[in-house]
Amino acid sequence: MNYDTSILLMVFVLPILMIEGGTANAIFFRCFVAKKGTETKLKRRPHVVFPRWWTLLMS
Image 1 (cartoon, rainbow, N blue to C red):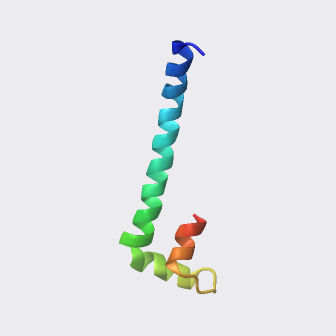
Image 2 (cartoon, rainbow, N blue to C red):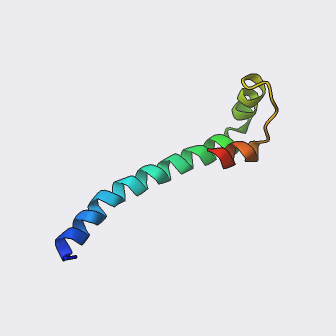
């Protein structure tokens, strides 16, 4: 593996990691900061009571 391949690999992997990090931040924000809205949706939609940590774990 030469330097060109390594640099191209880093260039293509970095945006993917940024997208995954942004998604993780959005999930944490939704579960912990906006918890009132999340709890109302959990009570209204599935007709089953899920704890907030379960939603965080499954997403």
